[in-house]
Length: 175
Image: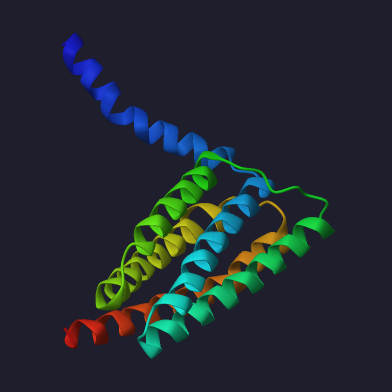
């Protein structure tokens, strides 16, 4: 019985930790998370624009980097206006680390392997960002202007996801 109780606690402990992290997010941490997402997308988008020889992949990288740079400016402007300093959290720290690791991996690829890996990653990362927006960021934003800004930016993530899916599919047919 005691082993069963220990096993049950071990299985549900990560759920409690994730719930505690979500409940603990404040507006400054939310902005920190958004900035981490934006920076990762700016970095890989710039690399794709510079590295890919496929016109659709190049254009996507350029557009994605530009729009995430614009998003970063909007959230930075909001934070300055609201007198909030973006804060790190385990979520933003994880996003930064994952982004840097992926960028290093991507730098080692070229040609169709680069394009396929990048577009596959863009599908996954934008789906994860949408989930993050819907499940953690928008519901936990306390400031109404921040909540509105998050809600306004959400459709762009959806558009990026759909564009990435289309390009990834077209690349798969050309193999």
